[in-house]
Length: 119
Figure 1 (cartoon, rainbow, N blue to C red):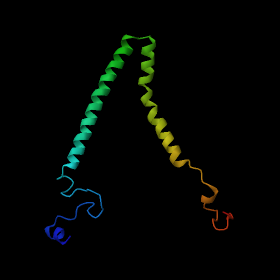
Figure 2 (figure 1 turned 90 degrees about the horizontal axis):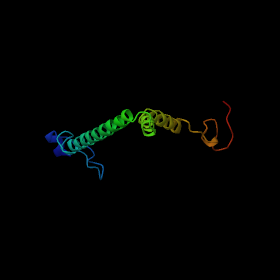
Figure 3 (figure 1 turned 90 degrees about the vertical axis):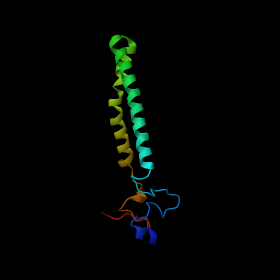
Figure 4 (figure 1 turned 30 degrees about the vertical axis):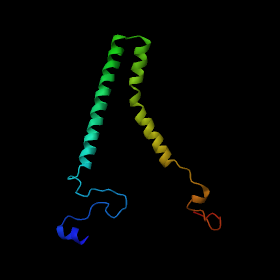
């Protein structure tokens, strides 16, 4: 530790936590951050290509097969992603904030005696 202070390099992030790798050479100097960024860019690029391809395919089928059952089904399914984020956000909000308190957890309830305090 005295050596790290003398050289001005500081102590590695997570050096005192056993099993934590941290960034021993700095966040931007090591390869972990750049590897993670490159992986993220590859995943995003691949997802964009796949979604673009399927979007063009669905658009072609909907326009060329206007009035068919497949066309109307694909048109309805393609708008499903507009509904899911709202539903997912509502479900998450309900699960986080609409938790019913047990009688023991109520602030006006005395756990030692079991009696309820007024107000």
